[in-house]
Amino acid sequence: MSKNVVIVGAQWGDEGKGKIVDILSEYADVIVRFQGGNNAGHTVVVDHDKFILHLIPSGILHKGKKCIIGNGVVVDPAILLQEIDTLRAKGCFQNDEDLLISEDAHLIMPYHKKLDAVRERIRGKHRIGTTGRGIGPAYEDKVARCGIRCGDLLKEDVFREKLKINLIEKNHLLKNLFHEESFETYDMYYQYMSYAERIGRYIADTGFYLNTAIREGKNILFEGAQGTLLDVDHGTYPFVTSSNTIAGEASTGSGVGPTRIDKVIGISKAYTTRVGEGPFPTELKGEEGVQLREWGGEYGATTGRPRRCGWFDAVAARYAVMVNGLDGMILTKLDVLDNLDKIMICTGYNYNGNIIKDFPSDSITLNNCKPVYEIMDGWKKTTSGITQLADLPKNALAYIKRLEELIGVSIIIISVGAGRKEAIMIENPFE
Image 1 (cartoon, one colour):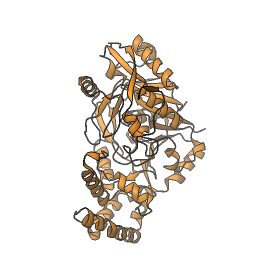
Image 2 (cartoon, helix red, strand yellow):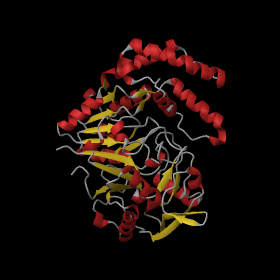
Image 3 (cartoon, rainbow, N blue to C red):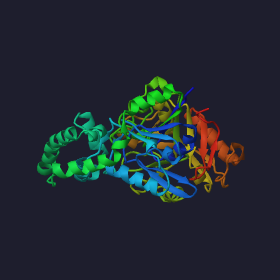
Image 4 (tube, rainbow, N blue to C red):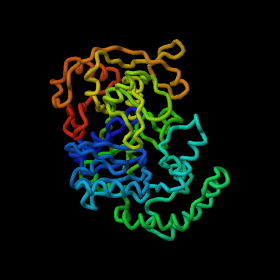
């Protein structure tokens, strides 16, 4: 009987999903990326070799695993091809049959990237903090029903006609509103037809493939990008990404019905980070924050931007448990806290003199919340290399237990280093 497991970030992204998906891919037959674009970066370390993946699921590092880019993803073909070439140069992804791309996944076009950058520039201090990869404008076109999909690359006449119509509008905006150079249909058409020659072999009806795989009893691992608090509906709007990042998107972004999902597992760091603009109640703005950043190597895998760092926020984590319906949590980067004398956990917010325990849906309210902390003793011992829960320092075990009490679900895997084997598996979600 198949088991289908969804992995989602439980914070503002960057929780270590790449490593965890890499670990769990051993037990899955198929790994599916179901939303986002190349604004996400999943870092995996295998035998001291670092891989940074932006579109292809981390399962591609395991031979014989089928990896799928689902219909909920927006695809930049140039980035995808760079990723394929890099993987092959390192001896991975040698079999074309290991990758499928949904024919219904939308394409990121050059005008999307130009519009993304121009809008951020015009917003100035009110910018959202996008990566400038064209993700938002691509999703806008999808919702506006004028997007171009991967399947269109296989039909030259259809692609050319859609491109021509879109460029009438996009060029008008770029030239007359933003005073930017316009694009030539001819150049873009041939650029994307050259992409089609290379990625056309992977484009397929992936929803049909996945449902067939489930009927055949195969294990499916659904991989999300970003994190719960960046969800366009349920995150800290407007400082969010352009897609739904919560577990429900695993169904809509892949074509697999929600009743086929067996478990939903969240991933959270042992502290909290955030990239870009937006509220962050537990952010440490002084030396402590800088120290956490350096110890944790907290720089964006996609942009290289330094991440804002702070203490674990149990209010936000409980919210992630609720909106995702989490069955368990995976805790990453516990080892980053090894050298601390005291560790803080945010258990509530002080808002205008009142203590609140529920995560506010309004960003303005959240921005005015002050964290209420509980202080725990650090363990001052190295946790890297530990593979059994009982071998963790006493105070580290106490910290983990307290987090479980505060968030309301069990912690089933603990990561204590960057390497594939540096993890403590308490419970395997596929068993």
